[in-house]
Length: 88
Image 1 (cartoon, rainbow, N blue to C red):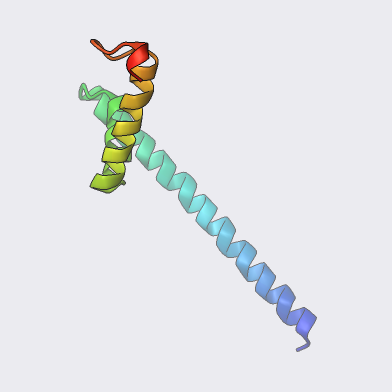
Image 2: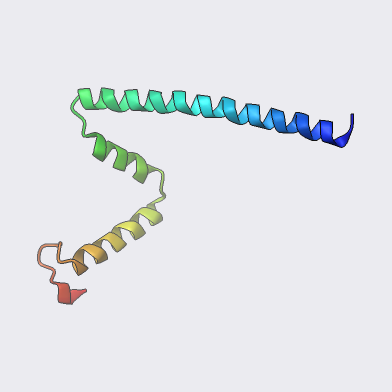
């Protein structure tokens, strides 16, 4: 078996694994969509649910930093009650 044949076989194996994983990813994405539909049918706000899922992926320090930056941006835009644009 020469090097080219080995590379061909290895490449084919990698491509097939990726294709299989892509198919699994589609199945999982469909399953997630169904769970969100179930949540919505039970009265949950899916937009907020997605935000909760996003926040749970972050550690406490990362969440606090994100919230602080959000407050700075909102204050700069005058979107926080009692805060003026000059305060930022």
